[in-house]
Length: 322
Image (cartoon, one colour):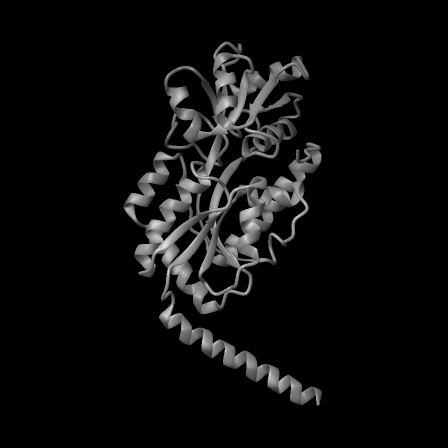
């Protein structure tokens, strides 16, 4: 009997594989939903809309954005995790996907509940200061922070934000004690750094570059592994005095776990073709991001490494969700 059951199970799997292959020839034959787990206006939404337009061109069906904000991206990501793995529900994932397991009790597994499809781009943070702070380099800032432990403050968009984690990673890597001042959003945080109420910020390039170019803020370093073309004269934080510091935001595409291989292959190829579109590359460059190519397996490994990295930062920084 067990042998018979085994044969039946194998036959069922084979039938499912043939069915998936047949459906893949017709996929997609209706609009595809792309969940963005954040409200309109942020970097995830910008990326989601750029990608949706290109994927629509590649797939021959409308890919429409569904903003499902809340709980730092948890609500929308869970909606993707629990959707049918039929290729008609996809989601944008970013660094928040790697941070949330350490901050929240999740009803999904950040690895097992998803099929990673393609990473799109990465974008470093930038260490910016109010010009009245008497330092001109990362090394000088580290020296000042060590002279005055607990006296320097840095602003962020809130607990668990990319800005907050970039600051905590700096503290851990540089071995300094600077104090986190959370705000209700990146805009209010930026304004207080510009006005001088708080002197330091680890912010996104897209938000910060205009104020750097106007002289309202001074850039000491960027958080990528190499210099960015947006601020080519600004060194990386790693080369400027804190070796090993890398704080990149990233954006990618995922589907619910169990996506049939033919559908995954179709979506991966469509994603790679989208990344080659000149208008998409130009827009990413304007946003201070760089397009990245990985296989689906490499992207899966990247997500695991990011979860481990930022989980350590959350733990060692004693960060808790509010």
